[in-house]
Image 1 (cartoon, rainbow, N blue to C red):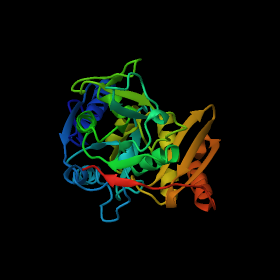
Image 2 (image 1 turned 90 degrees about the horizontal axis):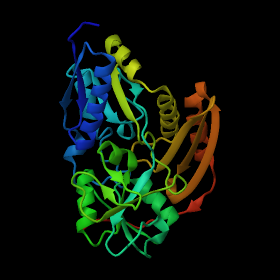
Image 3 (image 1 turned 30 degrees about the vertical axis):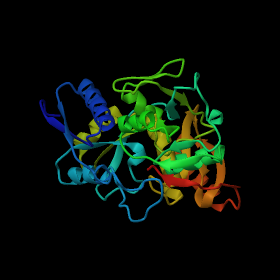
Image 4 (image 1 turned 135 degrees about the horizontal axis):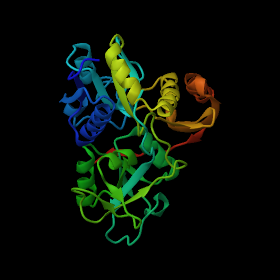
Length: 333
């Protein structure tokens, strides 16, 4: 590989996207000290549609809300690799591109964020008062919250992590929101033993509680960062291979096969989590389609990651019954 070659990394411009892209650039620089890694920012459709509803499967919204422009940059040769939050990357990619690698996965769990004034202690989901108002833009999170607490009022919220924290801190009509622990970690936020959320620009008085996987299973790919490249670019493929965390790649392969089998996109009402245990991949999944909660789990050998996802998708798609949910969603004023 030529010395002093520049590798262009395409990314969104949000604080979280830049943190992820910079982490990949640093790993690349450490692995290939003779190369130069440069970050180039592209504004995606999802960044422009700040008023669009993300809490419903809206067929009017284009696919790849947060990835399309990065992929176009790859295809035009304006970038060598694109760095994505893997949960945003559709399972069907444009011709000529593929998911070449994933960085080591962060903690996949979700976090409740709420005001501490008047609480006096860390709260769990069961501790919130009847008809408490929780905000999320995720269909999966909304369904999981209602499965655990049918009485909750779920409203929609948009904006980056800092914006959402400000909304919870400054809006007494909101009791809490839900964010990914991985995103908070990458932005250098920390949850203290007493539940206090700390970090740069965190509003005073916010507390956080990590949700157990039994309460809220993550979305497909949550906590993982994906590297998308051109299929015919052998030079970048070698770089991606060095940056790939194999067990993470195996797990997200199973999860994405499940999502594809369920016929869904990034806002599909499903959740899944795969993990490598010995020589097998074990995965649990849940579907909230048609307001019914259906759950399944299975395991297969490491070489059968895609088959595992397909198996669970078939199992849940054919399941005749589930626990019915009462849906009560509305928008933040």
